[in-house]
Length: 202
Ligand SMILES: Cc1cc2nc3c(=O)[nH]c(=O)nc-3n(C[C@H](O)[C@H](O)[C@H](O)COP(=O)(O)O)c2cc1C
Image 1 (tube, helix red, strand yellow):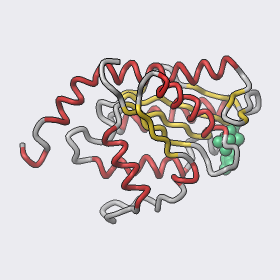
Image 2 (cartoon, helix red, strand yellow):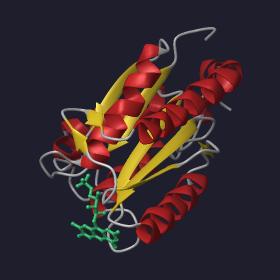
Image 3 (cartoon, protein in one colour):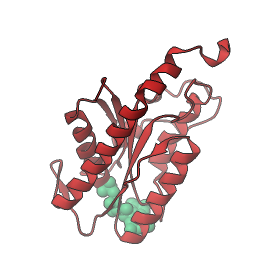
Image 4 (cartoon, rainbow, N blue to C red):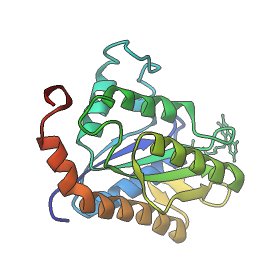
């Protein structure tokens, strides 16, 4: 890594022992082990976000913190449960706050690498939710990393921050590795844009 990268983790559920939160934290810890600074926004914190309302102004302290960290982010890791075949409202509401970044020099998630993790109670929702997340991140102009971790929670358990399957832990590490690697590749361009004139000055 040529310079410190900032990786933001976002996701999980409000459920105690949330598997998607634990999977997220495993991936974010891997990014931290590679020298990235990190910040995780997990279920209980995301639940304090009001429903996103365009032009409503301040969404409160968690919203400000989330947007500030996403602005600084070189990479993002998103983890959602599969709820009825797609991402949860909690995670989608958090992602909606990127609308506050629409006029930034790097709007939404532009020029950030974004890794994706889904846990679901079966393969069908795991895969459809991963596809939905990919489409959302593309809409936000983020660079989805190639490997997405689809975790079947009927086969894989999480306890005390550890995963029962070595193979799944490796998959979560692969997501983090790709986020850090791609973020590092495009860091020079991102920092150049961020240090240049802001939209209002152009
Ligand atoms: C409201 C709701 C909807 C769900 N819908 C699906 C579904 O469509 N397909 C599926 O496989 N699992 C579904 N599940 C199960 C969750 O995706 C699964 O248990 C997931 O691992 C929960 O994540 P968590 O451990 O982080 O809370 C649903 C769970 C809830 C609470």
